Image 1: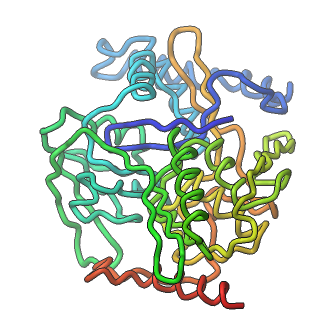
Image 2: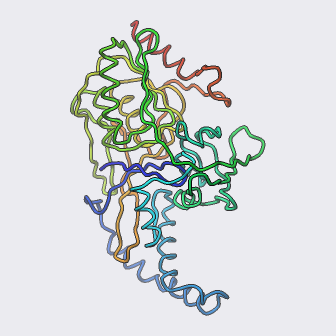
Image 3: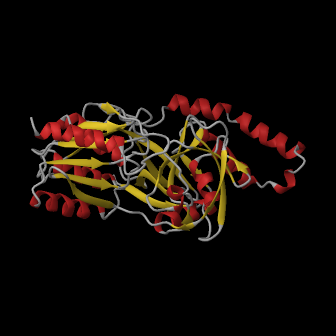
Length: 392
């Protein structure tokens, strides 16, 4: 069950998707609960009838509008920001998003505590250049306030033609008041990986996302590091919002023995689908440290949690975002689409990733002004720890 990278309005949005009914979700709705719902559905029709009779603008609302509104309300009752209903027109746009790229600002967005937030700005894109950080709250997009807005609705407003401007009202912990930014949309370029050898033969690998190229690029970086005589590795997953699940499992295989659990998908029925390492295990005996922060999400959390549980690899930085669920895409008969959460991810030791996130072994806060004069306290701590590991 892979992850699909979706270039969207606000930049990039990553989530676990199952396209169609690919596997048994587990557990049908009980007969009693279905009959109870049917018995009380008369309240819905009674309300719609009253609206039709009394609402001043009722002539402009079609029966299909009522239907889609009811389904949207049913999905909203789940209080899950990753479960969404798309009308046929929105479903068409969603499918375009899965297969295309658009002008945006280059960030992944999510919902925390019913507030739209930045998960991670993408390196080299407008959001990063504007100074956005993981955890920043998005209070308003152009003239629309984001109270109770889901990511799909936000993306529709943020996306636009490259060269046009979108206004974002932002708030950050420590600010006395919100600040408004005017961001020029651009075609989003998503970086994948950089690496270099640090002093003491320490390979420093920055992985920006888990797209389809990440596996082969990591292969080249890891192999080059070994050939160069690397004695240890610092893997930087900060502000990495995720990507393909299979890619995270593939990269975990470099650090873990074959057959070890990388992540489990737990379904409603209690059934668990365990995904295991398939090697090549070439970095198993090499000391390693992983950098994470609030912008590390989804596939990043899977990899970080697996290395922390299976190898005791130290995580340095700040708690991760907490996006650990899998969505299934169901195409309905009228062309509408339902995206619904069907499973949650658990680390090899059974820790829930969703909402809780992954807590680092060594917490190092990044100053509000970020990296100044090339001083990066989180990276410096990681290098300090890896040197200690090498010298043991």
